[in-house]
Length: 480
Image (cartoon, rainbow, N blue to C red):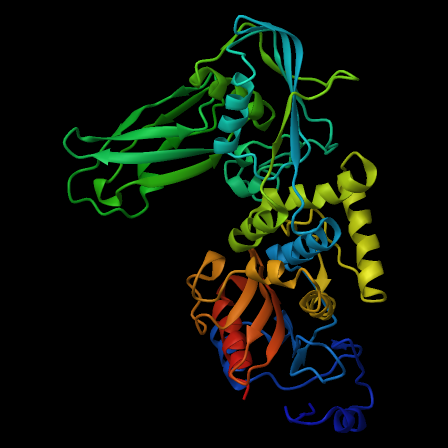
């Protein structure tokens, strides 16, 4: 194995190796250099072989500098949620940080004396953040049109997305985990219910609030408290929740008062009916009346909206996607690329749109296999080399501030708040699946230089790789 001193000039590197060529900061041939001793030691402690790791550390500015560290950088690996970097940067570049999503609302009928004789139509166009508070505002605006009673139906138009049937249990057998929620043109509250438990020691129970309220679902209002002095521990298991029945939520266990107020978010078991139940439940909670039903359908041709609900800007949405690794929001972004280009969003269309963007921006760099754009996939692939080139391009881009500020800060916030690496030295996207652990982003070194770091571990024991990745972050940050 050959060794290149870190300070070796590019000309000497080319003379030493002959096969090294840097174009825009990317490695064009595989260069084998020793891994830092602390990284080798972390791999040994985690019982991970060296070939489980792919890593590239290069200057963020690009140019013709040799990589500071390259190990198996050309190998396509499963990056897990690190794939969100590709989706979010493409969205920022193609749509712009100020891009917003519109949800038009139509009234088809006559309003008289507080009653609408006809239907209300709500048209989804892929808004990733139509959360409970914004649904409340949308329906309040509808009431502001003078409507308290709808003598007809509320019709939900979800035709902007043409996506296949989704089996929430298929990926990992956990259909009630919010990360398995499916994208939807009219995605509401991420297709999840937030259950807030508030203990009342005097009454011996915890009260449960459900958001959003779902029409036609029986909800248990309280649960007994555990024996005084019981440690919080695994409070979700202690509740013995029954959440798989779409018409009923029940708890057979107890709640430890020592937990204080906690929130449990769970995906709704019948995703197809979630939006209809949420709209009707919120409408009735606001005092509205509905003689018909909430159903799917299309907006009639020629009908004009009475108002349009507008999402937060893309820059804010991207922050949620990357800081907290929100899978369904990432898929909404990914499908929006196809919706913008084709008028209807499909996963094939999104993959084609991303591929066209990649080729236009990165030329001959090997394109990723993004699958659903969120990294929640066993088949997604990208090499450290290709991702590093993209991150170098992003560093020179006008949307660099929005992308970088969306990334978790090591030891500070988001999915990196518990990182054991140097706090505040890096903005990195994390990724983890069974057999996968990864980080990618930017590290601010002691020398004042900014580095792109991409590190991916694919191995059955990848769950133990966190100290390896922390060691790589620390080593990169120590550059003098």
